[in-house]
Length: 346
Image 1: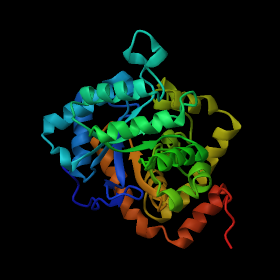
Image 2: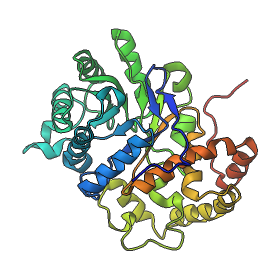
Image 3: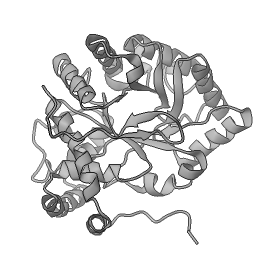
């Protein structure tokens, strides 16, 4: 599928306080590649993303029990893309599917981190990943062990930067304190959920980490599992992901259906629709552009099962200049969920 002529030029942003540039919109393999989307469509989506200027492809050992990594790596080889043109990430924590005994096949111990990255690279068919994440905090493993091991992996050229996903601010700060004491690299980036309906961690909890630690964000679920597209406004279709997926995050959304939180979110989306109409766009583009308006967001990780969904996401870049202070204030009035700053400014 050819790239639409009216597609905006991709924007690239520095990943936190580093010299690495990532596409503002990235493509992730969560829920889709190696699972819900067959190989042919996976290849087509990755090709569409690459042709649209996306250079950042995100994965994890736990996505589809490693099949997502395998398929992404296969696509890179199939299209003959130059490795130095790509930013590839993986995340280590949930590796239980790869052993007969789950005891040491998960978490952030030195054993699992080293074995996990070696196995991920084998599945990807790559010599290194650009980014490696601690997919969740491991409160049973000493922080020094985790910090030392990520630096060990980087020192051996198997990754260039390390970061976290869904860590508390105090945990990230503790990792930095350990790294500083040891003269090592601390976590450069965080991968939290961030969207119009989930804001507190990004906009308040991490507030000091941006200036103090140079933290960059590669956020997931910018559309809140599809809720912010408006496709669930009149109910949950039987064939939709929320109705069928067994993923833990999506199962959490499914449990909300019919409850007060779900009803409140749907009501909010309906109130936002007139703003999208006024800007001659759709809710998905508005929600994605709103996420990208945050200067601390280096990249918003999106999913796609069809190439045209990639192009629709990229078109959200056209909206950024239209999100003026007045429009953002109008959106804020509808959302009514801006978290209070943790640090009082004088």
